[in-house]
Each structure stands twice: as C-alpha cells, then as structure tokens.
Length: 318
Ligand SMILES: C[S@@+](CC[C@H](N)C(=O)[O-])C[C@H]1O[C@@H](n2cnc3c(N)ncnc32)[C@H](O)[C@@H]1O
Image (cartoon, rainbow, N blue to C red; front, side, top):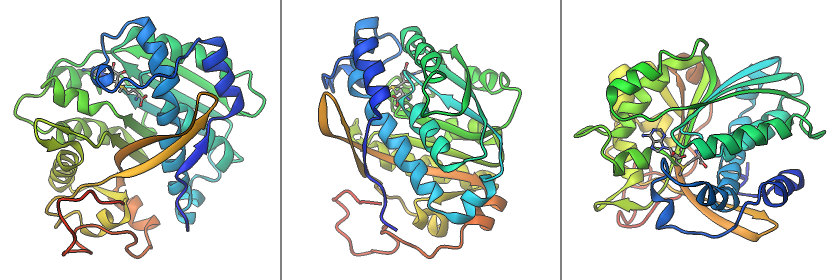
C-alpha cells in the first residue's frame, strides 16, 4: 500500500491559526532550535510555520498505523481514547492525530488528552485551539484537554512527572522535542532516546503505542536519527517487553540492529505555502504481546540489515 506523505491542512484549521490567531509563516531554522523560553511572537511564528508540519507528520504516521487492518480492528469498537503528549508545544501533532482518529474510528466518541510543555505561550495557544475544535462540525469527537506546564531539568523531574497521570494511554506521543534535551544536556552522559522512553513506555495501555518522532539533522557531529536508533534499541533490549511496529524492518531486526539512519519526508500545503517540506525520523512502539498479535507483515522498505551494501554515508528512506 502506498504510504501517505503529503497532506493539505484542513480549511477550518488554516482559518483559525492564520486568521484568528495571527500565525506567521516564516522558517527560522536557527531560532527554532530550543523553545522552552520563546516569547509570544515567536510562538506565533512557530504556529504558522512548524505547527502545520507536525500536523502532517502525525496524520501521515497515523494513516500508516491504520493501514494495518489488524491494528484498526483492535480499535474499531473503542468509544474513548486517552492521549499523552510529552512536549506538546502548540500541539500540531495532536490535531493530526485527532483528525486521523475522527476519520478512521466511527464508533469513537471522546478523546482525553494530557499535554505537557515548558513553554506557557505555546500551551495557551493549544488550549484556545482546542476550545475552538469542539465547535468544528467536521470533528464529531468530544475533546477534553488538560494542558500543563512542565520543565524537565533532570531525571528526577522525569521520575516525578510519570507519577502525575492517573490513567494509561492508547497514544503516548512526542514530536520534535527530544533533540532539545540533547542540546541542553538534560541527562548528562545518557542517551535521551533511552532515558525518556524508559519512563514513557510503562504509561501505555495494553494496546497503546508510543510515537516518537524527531529531527534528522546533526548535533556535535552526530545525526539525531543515529542517536535515536541507538538509544531506543538499548531501551527496548533492556526491558524486553516492547517492540517496534513501524518501521516494519525494526520489528524484525531491532534486536540485532547495529545502527541505522532513519528519515522520512512529508509535505504539507496550506494558505501560506505549497508543499512545505518536513523531514523526520520516527518509531512506533507498543507492548510485545500486542505487536505479535497485529504484525503479520513481511519486511517492507529498506534498512541496513536488508541492504547490507548500501552506501552508509547516505540517509536512508524508511
Ligand atoms: C520544536 S518544539 C515541538 C513542539 C511540538 N511537539 C511540535 O511538534 O510542534 C519542542 C518543544 O519541546 C519543549 N521542551 C524542550 N525542552 C523541554 C524541557 N526540558 N521540558 C519541557 N519541555 C521542553 C519546548 O518548550 C517546545 O515546545
């Protein structure tokens, strides 16, 4: 099945962010690197530039998940779904996820979201956006969101944070945020993509998935996707209770993986830009029992294991 890689921002969402909230399209790669302290004006720029990309990434990843009929069947009768977004920012990925749930699960009635981030202006935008979404006729779901301020300074904060939620989640998501922990060296001498998932994975429901997505460029000579693959594989090997289901090759080979560069390109079109490009590396992980139940696919796509002679200096498409 062809993987969806290009989407249009829904008209109602485009109208709200650009016309009501004053969002601005202006890519600023240097300024967007670290966001907890960004001011209101920059958050408006984030909303107009990077929010639509996160929307598209989440919508396309969800589409890929629902392409698996066994996964979709497990969710088909559910009426209520819980989501946790770690470092939600303005929450483009939350709207992409909701849009996909709204489309794919006709029996679903309500979605409960716990969303955490350090930036108060970003959270405020997200809260007001969610107030508006409940009035949109295209979205029939009832959305209950609790956006919360949270600045993680060290591993102790992480330990305390995972005690806050009082439910398990069908989706734990984190988009384009863990690289900021790498930059600020929040967990000295540790791999962020090992530390953070080790706290988030136990919050998954029996059928829950962790969707971890991040940037693909490099920091101090190391590409984030390499660091992510290394950290996640270490975390999964240690706990032995979870497995990757997307990309499919990871399901088959993550135990013996020697390292890999993941990258996928998505495009989003909105009133301010046609086919805006976003490149991310992502993994979708769930409990091993659930993974074994829903994964009957053969290996698709390429990875270092299936293409041993590939040019290792080039990025891989998943
Ligand atoms: C690039 S933004 C991504 C936001 C959103 N997930 C998206 O894809 O649009 C990264 C977010 O991580 C948050 N963040 C970075 N470091 C953090 C920390 N130590 N504690 C809490 N939030 C943090 C920032 O405030 C920012 O909103």
